[in-house]
Length: 304
Image: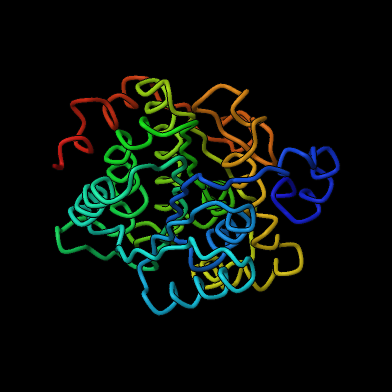
């Protein structure tokens, strides 16, 4: 727990190299999903300040337009565009990506930030469980569909924000007996985030000219955490990170030269590569299972 809280960020930040982020992003295009609040909005704000073109992909039009207005007002950057999309509707995700490729000449960085923690099991119009559709399938389809555009663009990068949900598996083990048979949204979410790590590793192997990374922002005080885990949120409130602290490594991975000197497909916390197994007490999944999920003949691959 301690590695994810606000104090851990403050001590890690002592080794951050300030000039890593002192760069202009003018002429570079960034797509950020879930950009209307929390980490997504803080990331969009930081990139807009550096002159980057920002494509905010959001589900809720009113919230998105409000966030866009804030960003434009605070940064003076008008190159901020809103796209309305529900990432749980996988066919719409594919259609959106196809349309985006026709309309725009470049996309330098894709930031997969949107994630959903459902309190109850819910299916989308395609009959797929909604949080799996958003957190795994939607991310995979969006990324895969945009790869041709990313590959044509300079210094392309894909960053996936993998949330504190991964630690939840560890935090909630004592409670599992009573949860059995019930839909446990936070556990399911943790599982999806694990799949995103595997997906990043697989994509990095396949598309070697794009820099892929996945990062854990720590426990951040966002509306998503407050809604999904109210007890945890109220008891931890004072030690949660701000959205800006949570976004720091996302921004660093998206804009700094230093980030791309590291190998592609790795996992980060506080601007540093970390093992995806030991600190988060995950199980090692076999290479065969990983191939099954995201390889060429996987169920994920053949939805379209």
